[in-house]
Image 1 (cartoon, rainbow, N blue to C red):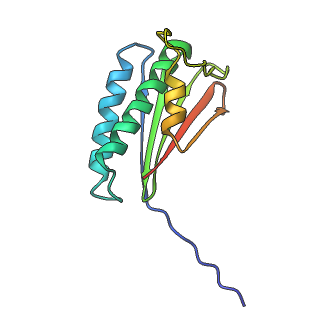
Image 2 (cartoon, one colour):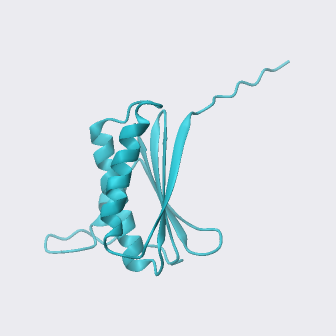
Length: 139
C-alpha cells in the first residue's frame, strides 16, 4: 500500500486592475511594496532585497503593458513560503521583444532587467485574448 503525502504550499494572492496610463506603474510599485511587506506576517519573510526586486519587475512589466498593451492591465501578485510570483495581463497578443542592451540605448532595457532578476520568466497567451507575462522570484 502506498501513502501519498501532499505538500500544501501556503500562499496569499492579490489582483489589481490598472488603467492604461503612465501613472499606473507608480501605483503598481506602491501596491507591490505594501502587499509584500504585509505578507511577511503570514508567510515566510520576504526580505527588503526581494521586495525591491519584485517592485522593479512590477514597474517594468506594468510600464510595458500600459505603453504597448492596448488596454488596461491586470497585476496579480502571489507570495508563498518560497517564491514571489508577478503576473501582468494585457490585451495585446504580441510577445514583447527583448532588445539587446546597448550603451547608448535610452529604452528597451526593462525586459532584460526582468529576465536577469527573475528565476523564471515566461510569456503565454491569456484566456480570452491578450497575454500573460510572468516572473517568479525565489525567496
